[in-house]
Image 1 (cartoon, helix red, strand yellow):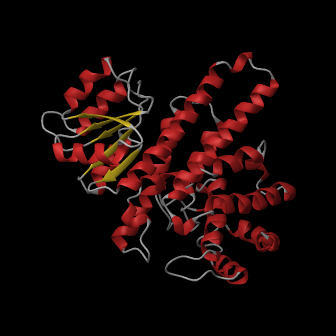
Image 2 (image 1 turned 30 degrees about the vertical axis):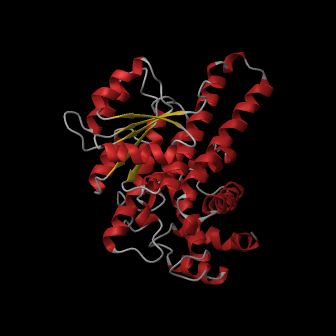
Image 3 (image 1 turned 45 degrees about the vertical axis):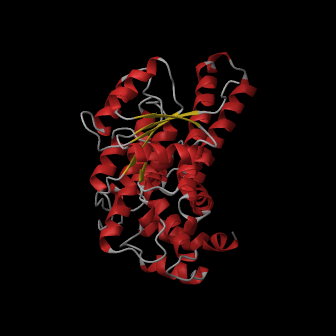
Length: 353
């Protein structure tokens, strides 16, 4: 009987690791193991895996060299690659993600977590292919079909958002809540003609959808930092800051296939600038005042407000009034003074949510 399970290819020079991976996944997936990157490349004439689990430290050709070849070949560039490795240092993790890997998992791995991460990445890839099929035929679609594409795009966004939040139980619902807060602020800006030189032509629905990707870089932050049940050390917080740059890199890789997308342009601004501060003390680029794009200044308010009123393992949730007081104290240092004045005007709408 033909095996209809999705094919996962696992590449590792250690037979014990291959055996452990196959044992963990074989009840759900067909697993093809390879003991070297060269053998993996030889198999693509016969097999087309749905996803590749790739080790880094291997003789002759390491995982970094292998993924460069995969991304250069037209028949393999779209196969998602997860580095499954014992190489536990931020520089290697960042390099792997910049080379095009969708995830980085350390060995020894948790079988349930590995399966969940594979499941989520396969879901995203499946929906991307579905969306691409619709896009390829977009010119021949009627209005109803166009609405279907938009609905599917939104579904993909929600899937990516769930992928981010599935890795961080402490901030569950953060993306949805910040989107709601952002909507209040954007609506108020447009009603009052504040910063009208910058807001001309704004599409609120598009902006709100793109804001869902502001924390997409957290997909790439290691579990021991993202899931830590307490305050981060200075070094750990330094690594957490990388989620901003990683998020921009993820969106830029999508932009390669869609250079004219206003949606992705807005998403990149949200992801890259929501931790900048009005006085220049923020990250990753130390932008100051109106050097920070208006979308980033708005998301900073929504992001901090939600963090303050939400429970964390290391703090109680603040009341709405306490959160408002803290944001007002940040006027002119952390936050745009004009936007804080606007926030105070509409803050009762934040409390009502």
